[in-house]
Length: 404
Image 1 (spheres, rainbow, N blue to C red):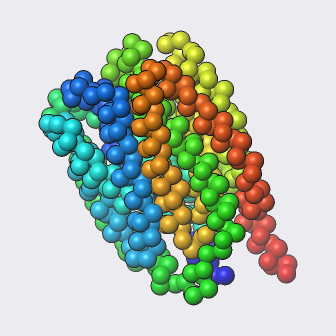
Image 2: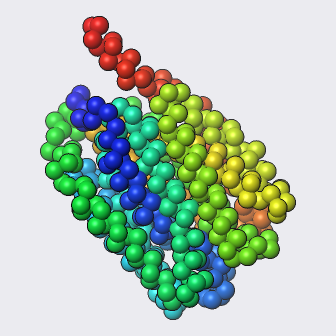
Image 3: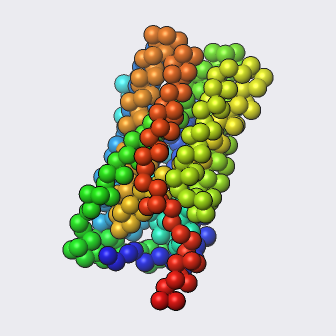
């Protein structure tokens, strides 16, 4: 089977540009979590209705990603990456101006579709430009997204607390800047040809034996994503109910995501050496006591516990994405979309379920229930095939080929 040509070494400049784009695009979805306490009060929403907003955003941002992944594998270029920031910024930057719940919903759908446009193609290109160092390259790419997702609340809160809720449209600026950089520094002639033009008939056949471990991997990612997204969505609301200010609640979200970004970068880089499955297993082992600690620490320790929890939660993020890409390398965009998009989109069901539990039993108990999700995922990790996801270092493989 032929493989997609890659660089002999990592092209860090282009990986960094893609990471910057990931930072910008992921600023926008996190606006909703920061503004949720304001929207609950302004629109008089129940927890169920508030969680439905997050679910709509998640569904539109994620369930459509497989379609965009297939398109990115077939048409190539940077068209989808260009339209992604346009739609994401337009959909999420006008939240402060929208008068009702009904008007808010279609804007969330538009913002979510924008994120879905960008992710599959950008993730596949990050792997392409990383050469044999996929773990490191995808780590840099994901670092940008996680930092952006963490900074989003600070960006939108800085605008609305400083200039008023109706000035939220100023958040359009980061997307505009990135689009100029994308057009200038990533020409189409630097991009690989789409898979539809390069693969042979034999390469179009998908081995069912590759899909079975992928399905298990997808389930593990879904459990992990549901726990993370549910916690992140209600974290500012939970913290304000615990007595923190709106700014401190948004900062809690930022601490969780920024420390998660660091954990994701380290976990992805280490997975090139110690193996993908090892990092995923270690992540879940450490998450369980860290999550329990967050639920029971005093208010003065809440930021420290969130920092630790975020770091451990994201250690296994990049290894999961690279596992998916390595399962079917010639379909990097599609496989990335299924892991990054479809799994996260289905996590939106869990967010809605968490909101329903919060209405029934209180938000503290609803968040506590999430602890069972990483515990279940840990049990499933041991059934992943081990050898398939422990790639040998590239230098070792090259030496063996030379020695015949």
